[in-house]
Length: 432
Image (cartoon, rainbow, N blue to C red; front, side):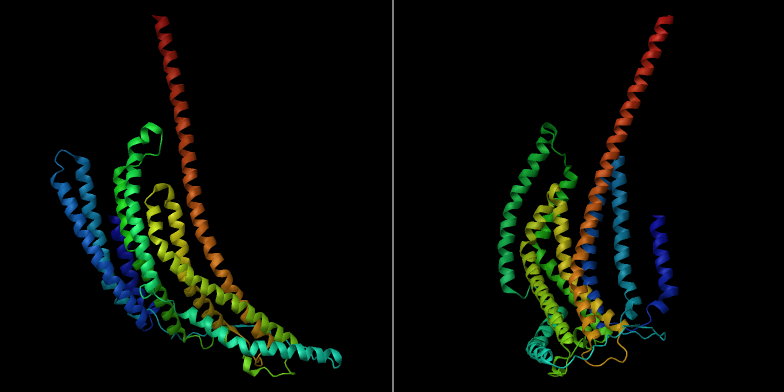
């Protein structure tokens, strides 16, 4: 209790004395509206849960005469419910501190951007080779001029907005079908878990306590029946974060996706072939990124439709890790565009090309490098997710090994002590 109060005091002191330099900007309306709406939902749920816990703890307290363990459990439940509800209500008060949390930067300091070294192209030689190069350049120029703008606009469209799932009638209908199937399968899951509890000690299965089993089944059943709303709220959260970043940084007007080169300014016969080749590379990488965003929408819809089955698996102890990885993967797919927007805006802020001409080679190369970074980001995030899952499994395995070793050492020590006591007893018998 003292640690909790000390932590709350430290946080309150930090907000009181250090809020001016940290929160020295005006509020972003989109993120503030999202935060207030989410906080209202959390407050309602927390209040209802606190009332339920207090009623349960009161009943345990009344019926705990002669049961010290039940009395202690009731006291802990009452204390935790009061502390949790206090923190939730305090969050509503602290929102006034965050009235100055997000907007465009207004600090007086000056930043030093990174100047990218320019690359100059050499003048080609005259002759038959130059005629062939001009013909190839004209062909590439036609491809670049006709394809770059629609593909870049498609990338920007998928990047800035993710369609919500509740507005999609097809996704809703498929989700209703899967929910009906999962609700029917939950009966089988309950029956199988009951069979496991019944026969665990006889057949050597893993024993599961009823106190842990019933809440797991209840939460899994509830999550399966509201999984579409949870997935849709994750998308709403992602859109709110993206809008907050774009509004705070001035949008994508100066992003390298658009500022890499201007396809309408390509002059036939005067643009070097190497620049045209880099433009084609930029176009190819942007097509791959566009396909990734399209596949992301398919994965989001598929994950929302199959989410009831994922929560059904989470009810089974052996499949809880698989369900956790699936949920983390889905969240990575949803929030990857937010990370992409942060990368794009950050790159446009600190990467500058001093005194470079339009459609320069280095500007196109920077755009290609940015696209490659965006393509590698999902793999990096998934590696982090898998690393945390593997580290958790390794930790469990290490704990099991340590438990086995300590058990063996304890058994060896007990056997040695028993042999020692037996030998002493036999010696005493001989002396008598």
